[in-house]
Length: 99
Image 1 (cartoon, rainbow, N blue to C red):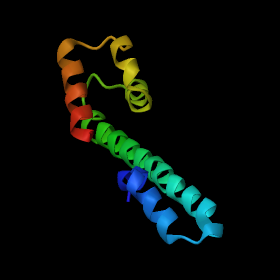
Image 2 (cartoon, helix red, strand yellow):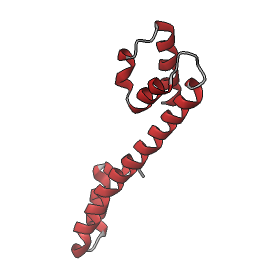
Image 3 (cartoon, one colour):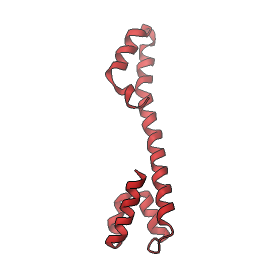
């Protein structure tokens, strides 16, 4: 459903098989479905990564609640948190597992 609807062949199929008066609505729906699919996909992937970070990192001794919250909200905060190299590797591995 996702990327397949963004391809040109779906537009051709809609124009060829649709009623002339329904083309604008059908074309709008064709553009809407990938957009809403991307939004839901982003929500799902964000929830998976946030839950995995919480599950795997919350019990570690170097992981304070504020640090964990920063990592869940943004990956760009990692360099600014003052973690050791080994600790950063653990966080990176967790992000990779989530992705």
